[in-house]
Length: 146
Image (cartoon, rainbow, N blue to C red):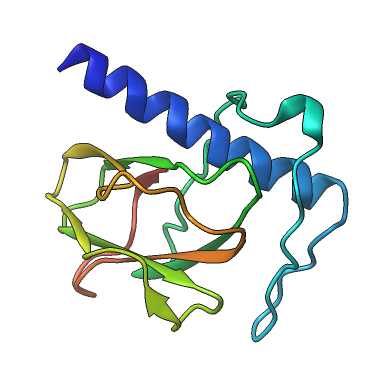
């Protein structure tokens, strides 16, 4: 199980860092109704692991969309959700838009629980825009981190 957790953390770290790099470089300006352009990772960093990025969930809402970009050479992902709300969270991953095609089955995190998720089918994601759709049932707001 520890090996599984380590694999999951390394994969999410790569995805989240690649997204942070793109956002800090100004390569993507994600606004409602727009998608970031896919960008290939430089040759010298392909296949490497990138640092993890922590996203604090918006406690003023019961849902939140978190965009990230998949880069060529960085197709594997890991998401570790820490749910400190009083409600079960649902996490969905969409491709190309916040309501686009689902990449995998929805993930459910119980109230007060934490769960890591990673590319379930073992195949890397294609380069492009992805969106995490995180929500509670509406009774309680989001609380926790990705």
